[in-house]
Image (cartoon, helix red, strand yellow):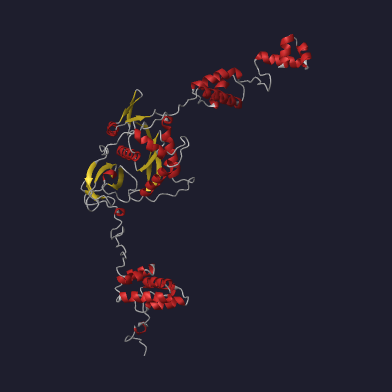
Length: 514
């Protein structure tokens, strides 16, 4: 600045050099850089071979909205007479693209939240879970998010059909305790059937469902998921925690009920911790937001849920002259049955049940309770998991009898351990006589030699089929010598210690021994 000031004052390079104490060439260099508009201090940018072609490069980048490739630009520049390398072209294209993005960058306005105004939801890909036939099937996660309180609801489902959507929406509204004014979602076929002149045409049944609950269904701008970023983040967070990956070390789910429990635990976790944006707990903010929510109708929307049926005393419903089983606790309850593809889906309103089954938990509203493959008359679809107390195993074999002591003597014997229980089952099946006396003798023997010894001996006796008078004491004595139990012989009539008669097989025939 002293050099330039001296030159402006004197108008001569030699005079300015004497005043500033520098060489006249230095004064001329600084003055020439200032007059040319170049930076006076620091390294100066030298002219490049591609500079005359930059207006054309900017035109191509602007025409392609910043997507044109550098190799395509280089080919066109070569056709125009450019003799530089492709590396120079790539650097120039990168600089022009950066300038274009800076001038065409989209700006985002924060979502204006208000209590009881917006509810956003979206679908996410869930983990694979064994289906009704035992084969792994894909699931989906219904993820809802209240914009003001940040309260999240995640519900697993098998599909994204309209009936499933209405059931999940009903369960979500009843979980948050009311209906907001607007519901924002994506342009799925279950919500938007068409776009006319850029205007979304709503599905008639989703509009009817919205009127039933007193809310309006809106969709985001197509190909613009940022307009419902809250729901997108809810899906991302839910999938990161619920879908088994190497990052979360979560193991695969053994049943759909286990996935439902994991979703409930996830919602309990995220709704009871302090949110980073609001600095408050979503569950506490929901209590304040419920004052602005609209009351829900007593009955859920059932236009798309199918036909009503009443569960019989055998825990089955009849649909198409075929019996389909339901979980326990739904006898005499009204359920809805609908056909989805080649499956029958059974849905129940948990709020209408007088006594909720134990497997319900904290869930409310419409819940899918069973899903069966469609069948023909005469071939009922029975899920053995719906009958946990049935005296028959799923493979058709009888279940082991339930042991319930009814006297003090029986309780003392069963208190010996699991070996006593096994001995009682096997001895009863073998038709052992004087079984009560032998049980009393086992109790007396346990007081003498110890409960652990007698319990182990009873287990060995049950496995070997040794139920005689002195078999238990013999086994205890044998084990006391340190001999392993594998040396014990299983009582079987197929084997005998008596010598055989094979030597007399040829008696009375020719060549018989004298």
